[in-house]
Each structure stands twice: as structure tokens, then as C-alpha cells.
Image 1: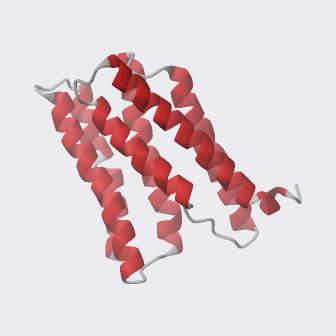
Image 2: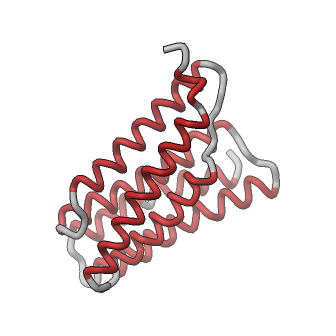
Length: 173
């Protein structure tokens, strides 16, 4: 297994301590969780750079990397919904988009095609991770609302782009 794939697996493994810190309500839990979240997010940035630079892009990475992102981001957003810091409908939009894009990827895979993350998907992931990191800090309510808005808008835009660019995968349905 190459280094980018190991970093992707590390991101998945880091979700457990991230959630444990939050749910065990340890002292400074939000800051410790933020540190774990940032570390996990940086593995996403690092594995992509290494994979592209050294041509280590694999089908496993194309599937596992977005899955790891979804798992990490969803874990944080569920926490924010529980705190009342994010409305449930915003999380639902994110989850529906993720299932829809994953379904599209499965259909494409059945046709021998792998759909890698597009530009808007990368922007969505990066902006979502930054917004989630900000939401762990004591920011004013308007900034929290702005973060939720950025997450929702980038989620919708990237979902529309995936389906627009890959509509041919759905044409035979």
C-alpha cells in the first residue's frame, strides 16, 4: 500500500479519537477535537499532493479518499447538529449529496469508469473542512451561520457539477 493510501486510512482511523474526545467531554474537548480534525484534514491535502507528484494515483485512492472525507466531515457535522450549532436540514443536504454522488460513482464503476473528485468537489471539501474547523472555535453566531451557508452552497454546487459532467452514466437507466 502506498503512502497516500496509508494517509487516507489514517484519516479514517483518526475519526474514533476525534469522536471519543467530544463525547467523553474531556477538558478542552473542542480544542483537542479541533487539533485531531485539523491533523486528519491535513492528511487529505498531503495524500493528494503526494499521489499527484509521484503518480501514485490508484483506484483505491479514488474511492477511499472521498469516503474518508465524507466520514470525517459527517462525524463533525453530526456533533454540531447535536449542539444546535448546525440545523439538521443542512446536514441532510450534505448527506443526500454524498449518497447521490456515491451512487453515481457506483453506476459509473459498473460501466468501467472511475469518477475522481472534480474541482468543485475539492473546493467543497476544503471549504467545508475550514468551516468546520472555525465552528469549533468561539466565533460569533453570524460567522457560524456563514460557515453553514458556505457548506450548503458548495455542497449543492459540486453535486450539480458531478451530475452534469457525468449525466451520460445515467442515460441508460
